[in-house]
Image (cartoon, rainbow, N blue to C red; front, side):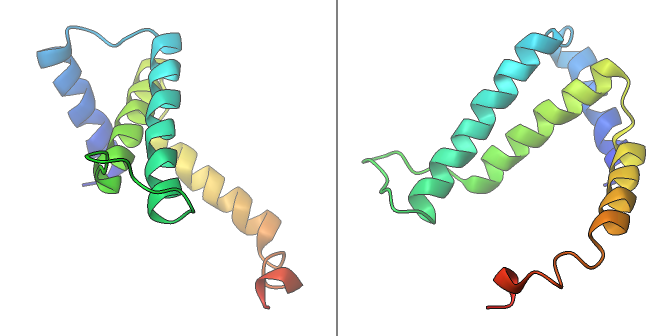
Length: 108
């Protein structure tokens, strides 16, 4: 699935099942909540914290929740994520094409 297709599928789902998009600030709050859920899993699975009994969740599902809300925000604000991502990748390539290779901290 392309990013464009994902944006359309989310939009179609919202129109069929979701009635309408939550407003932008509500979606921002939801995004923050979902990123927090990813952070909880990461800190327990890869960090020093441990899961509480019955707490373990699937990282992929939580990342998909983050992606869903990002797509919602893009759709409701008129952002073409394919175009935005390609511009961002080009920016990073121009800015960082030597930076990481020359970073001695990364070659240790």
